[in-house]
Picture (cartoon, rainbow, N blue to C red):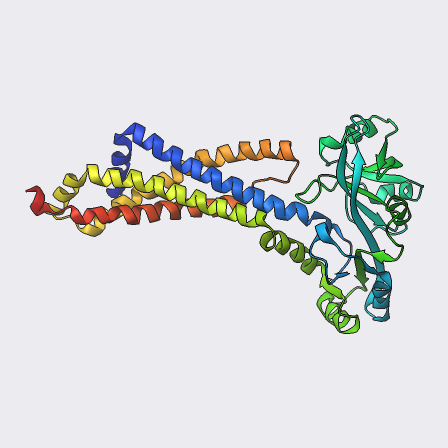
Amino acid sequence: MNQKIPLSWLQLTREKTRLAVALSGIAFADILMFMQIGFRDALYYSNVRMHSSIMGDVVLINSQSNAVLSMKSFSQRRLYKALDLPAVQSVHPIYLDYTSWKNPVTGRPRSILVFGINPDTNVLNLPGIAENLNQLKLPDVVLYDRSSRLEYGPIAADFDQGKTVNAEVRRRRIKVGGLFTLGASFGADGNLVTSDVNFLRIFTNRQRGLIDIGVIKLKPGSDANQVAQALRSYLPRDINVLTKQEFIDFERNYWASSTAIGFIFTLGTIMGFIVGTVIVYQILYTEVTDHLSEYATLKAIGYTQNYLLSVILQEALILAVIGYIPGLACSLLMYKVARDATLLPVFMDLSRAIMVLILTILMCFISGMIAIRKLDSADPADIF
């Protein structure tokens, strides 16, 4: 094996320009796959951060609700009926809706997502919520998501400087009483949290008692799956009963299968894989063609077909590993640029890095397996 690696390496490095083109092509394919997978995962993660922050074990939603983007209200009496089960400790209603926020500096309106909760009990495990619950008890006071996009105005910066921040939401004057952190998503560029009373003051068209999410906390030692199953039998069919993890998966599956966005990012990853395969195939095919007479000579002096195949596959492996390194480095830089520009959680993780490395090796091996078919024409009888 130690004698085979130098041959494959020497063949690749003999044409420095060709090697550079091959590595650039592989790096480009890796960057394309990294960016598509990164945006796809950011899409999924950003849209379930609220779901993950819910401090509860079972969630009730209207059976006609598809995602946060299209929630349907239901009577909170359904939620309070869950208290009939011995395993239920407490229930907590959540209102949510989209409305218009007017930038206090430019006056430009922008859609924002508003959550209405009972300020007596915290149901969202987000930084900044618990310490500002008392602020929500004041009339027309909201908490502003410091990770919202800058198009809403310098709200967080002004608040941190001790300035009084007022804004207009749905033509109603409100005051920012504190900051919390949730983050922008593909569904909402910014978020507000307020009390259920203030929520209904903002959304005058909403009726008290028609909530969007019902959160159920169970007594210690209770099994969420069993309680959820019992609630499905106990509550009317117009209510969808989900465990917290099922609620997270419910939202994730919506973006993955019911929107074009998930499909587009997956297709982009596949296209990156195909592009890389074609580029590497062209390089390896050219290598085989240029050295066809040498391969025929090696066959004539006793080297087997399998040996020649191993040389080509070693070249594919070398290209995959070396080309992956600049692709990874460039992707890390582009992740930071995308994160700063969009405020989306575009981060590199170990599982994604390993997955793309495996895809790169597979991509190069497929190219090598296609290219080595040219070796069948390396017949010593034709050369001599």
